[in-house]
Length: 134
Length: 263
Ligand code: SF4
Ligand code: SF4
Ligand code: SF4
Image 1 (cartoon, rainbow over the protein chains, first blue to last red):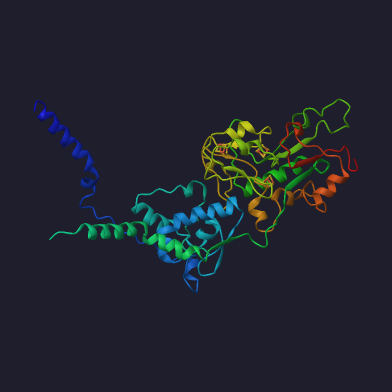
Image 2: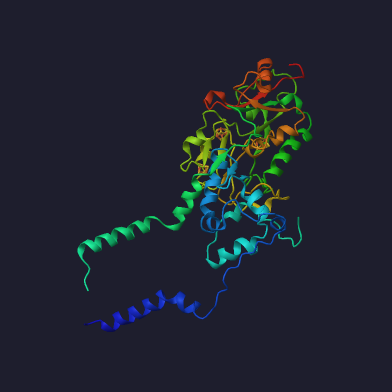
C-alpha cells in the first residue's frame, strides 16, 4: 500500500462528483408537475378527450408525434383515425396546439420537471399565450 | 429454505416475460388494431405534378413580386437582407443565366431582358434525393421532391447536387428575420436546408399552390401524366423550354418564353 493516501483522496473526489446532483438538489422540493387543460378550446369541448386516452398520451405522445410526422410528411396521409374511431387532422402546430394553446402550463410544466428540452419549438410556432383568446 | 433448480427456472421464465410485456406495449397493441392513417378525400392528387411558367404574362416588376411575396409569407421564408445568407423558395434571374445555351443575339425583342421565375424543378430524376444521406429529401408518389426538416442534418450535399440552385441553407437562426410570422406553418431552424415544396400542405387541403393562385394566369399547375390536364394542353400548343434539360434530371417545370401573346 504505497499510495493509499492518493487513492483515498481520488475516491473521495470521485464520490463527491458522482453524488453532486443529489446533494445540490437535496431538500429542495421541486413542485410536482401540474399540467393545465383549461384553454378556451378545451373548455368548449363537450367530451374533453384527446385523440387517444390520457394514459396513452401521457406515456406515448412523443412516439405518436413521430408516427404523425412520418404519415403526414412522407406518405401524405394527414388524417388519423384513433382507436375510438374519431378522425383528426394530423398537424402538430394547427391541431395539437389548437387545444393545447397554453404551452407554458401544458408542455413546459412536465418537460421542465423531467429536464427534457424537446426541439419542437425551434420550428413549430408556439401559440400566443393570450388570456382570453379564441 | 432453499429453492429447487426447477422452481428457479420457472420464476426466471415468468419474470423475463414480464420485462418484454411492459404496460406501454399493451397500450400500443390495444391501439394499433383500430388506428388508421388516411389521405384527405378533399386533397388534390396526381401521378406527376408539374408547373408551366408562362413568361408572357409577367410584364411588370409587380407581377414577379406578387408571386414571390405570397409564397415567402405563407412559408415563413426569412429575409436576411444580404445575398450571402439569402434563403429563397421562389426567385428570378435573367434569361441568359437561366437558359445559358438558348441565348443568341437575334432573339425577339424583350426576350433577352426578360427575367424568369424560378423554383425547385421537382425533377423526375432528382440528384438531390440520391445524395441525401438521411433521406430527409425524398420523392413522393406524386412526383413532388419533398424535404423532412426534422431529419435534415445540414450536410448540404443536396445543394451541391442540385444544378439549379434551388436550395438554401440557414446559416443563422431564421426566426428573427421573418418580418411577419405566418402562424399556420412552421419555420426552419439554423443548420437546415430548405426549398419550394410545391405547396404540399395546400394540395392536401384541396388548394393549388399559392404562387399559382396570385399569378394572374402566369403560372399553371397540374398533372403532367394526364393528357386532359391544363398543363398538358398548354404544353401541346406552345413551344416550351426546361432548365438544363441536357443534364437529365427531367425537370417538372416548363417555360413558355414567347415574344408576344400569340407566340
Ligand atoms: S431542382 Fe434541385 S432541389 Fe429541386 S428536385 Fe431538382 S435537383 Fe432537387
Ligand atoms: S442538407 Fe439535409 S436535405 Fe440536404 S442532403 Fe444533407 S441531410 Fe439531406
Ligand atoms: S409552389 Fe408553393 S412553395 Fe413552390 S414557389 Fe409556389 S407557392 Fe412557393
